[in-house]
Length: 549
Image (cartoon, rainbow, N blue to C red; front, side, top):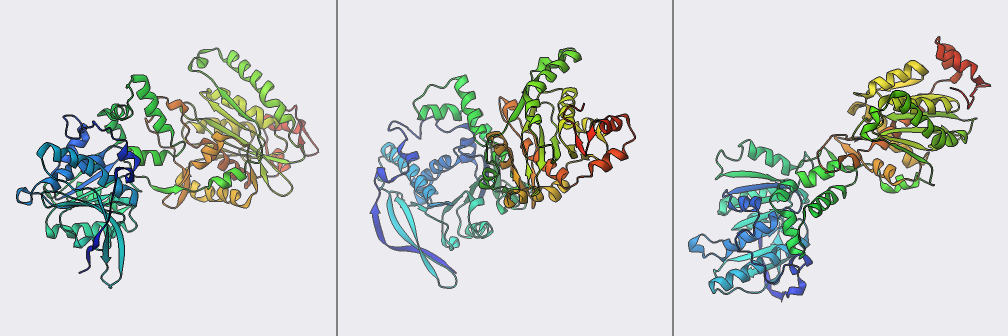
């Protein structure tokens, strides 16, 4: 059997300044044993008595600290009274040092209360020997308790976990290099007694950590809580239990309702368009995908200059106005803001467009593009509409389409509520010109890789805009399919200010249109409608007149 044993004596004794800032920032008068120090969810986790404990958590919910407090008391207890050694195995070195620092702070309070001796933090070397005879040296830290037990924190995962005896804590298990091996070895530890605590935020649905969570919930590790138990603790759980107030206490600030709302929204918004990452890291909901698919550097290279981004944002009362007033207001906006940009378009080039529909929470996004002689797709401007009634969205889209020279294709989101405006637009401009797209995983699987390839090949340019960049960073891979996940969540107090990658979906629809163009002459001749007659009258030498309506 592989073994792991101390190699040599203590290398050095750590001072307070050697510990991470998170430990040094603990106030001198902070008493970890005082009543109410642990929040409700921390108390529940510490009180859970099982041979195998697993916690799927949101980040910064205080579970590691609660574990440090609980295990410090375990190590400080005499062996005859149930005390044991404690081994802490993190995914990165810094967390090992943080954990041992927490334990040192706690044990000093315990030692003073019980007149016990406790040593300083010692740094030493572990020799980790594999089954094949290979060895490596692992930096480790320990605290020797008067009880005869010790707390050991390692800098990285040893190959020989099975050689440990006592209580073992594996932190951020889903992010260890070989998750399967960690979990398998951890189960073998039970042969020697003690317990296993597996703590982690999620790292995808297919990660073995998530599978172990599901297995424990299904009773596959034992039918009783004494055998195995799992808890899910989210960021919102911690907030409800006083996390904000604890943060203010540590920062010597006074908590206020306004400050709490600002703090909460600030943490949520810090994830930008990465909704799946936010839900995984804060809400303990494992994501389907494996992370961002479109590198930021490609996005920035595709944004060579500032170009117009027209944003039409209306309030909820706008829908109560008479329809003629609504139409007049939007027409005035079109004439003043959008028309000058349309007049500058190259009348010798073909044009296409994509539209991603939204009515309330998201942004309805319209992306036109001109195709130059080198077959580059250049987006001269984009239009974002927020809380704009469907009739007025139709007004905006039809106005722009009628002014795009040599309109060759339009691809519109016909999913859900978008179906109506897509169908009406096809009736107006021709069903062979307007592609009504039912966006699905299969559609994304076929077309999003083509859109991403355009960024890599450098054949697409977009307006330089922070929101548009954020939308494209929202493209993530789910089961091998790059797509924009539009799943909703009640995450913010200001949900209307949160984006869902709408500009990326609109851009992908535009790319679809550019690869499914028809001849403008063929399109006109094939239409036997009054709209076709108007188009024929407005057509001259294969080009649409700018005054066409």
